[in-house]
Image (cartoon, rainbow, N blue to C red; front, side, top):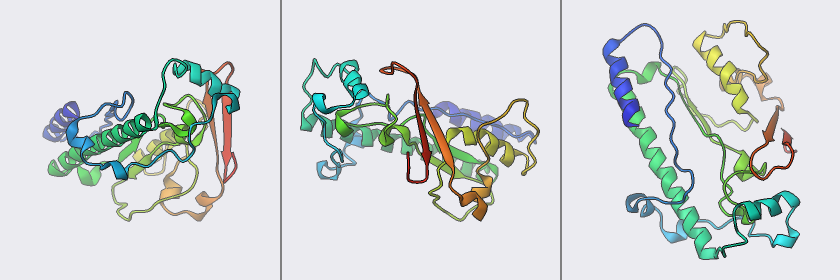
Length: 235
């Protein structure tokens, strides 16, 4: 956040006609579940929700979840209900920490007179199981790990709206190109799997038709590529 602020000061001083593209990457709220007292105290213990699906006994887990049990070394440690709630408490605290950093940058954009002409997109690379089904981190195509935030603040589009349409990170490239060229993007050198979200943001009813999104996982715990297809309510 500090380096992003310094860059914004530089951009404001130059006031070039050339547009800028700034990527600001935060590690939080990633594990380990450690936070500071100031953010921990924003949440009372009674405000922390328990996993919707409690831990599933090892013998009843699917093969991949059994592999994750060993990957997380849960066969070496006993995790209590209190441990789960503390971990969730710290994770929420770190979400608030990131919220504060984002607010700091948005305030700086406003102070520098850049807010009205800057598109801001907030997203993440993965979710977090946080003890659901006894699982942690990512490593799975279950919803808590697969779903990520996607929040956009775009110039000249001041009416807040929430869309339930299925979207994917592969839609970001065509969306950014669409936004940067006023809907006249150049021809791409290679095919792009995604599609622009601008029609959806402009309340184009055709864009509200069922969309299909795909996911693939080939990292830790997977013995072969794991894939998912989501369309409407079905996955």
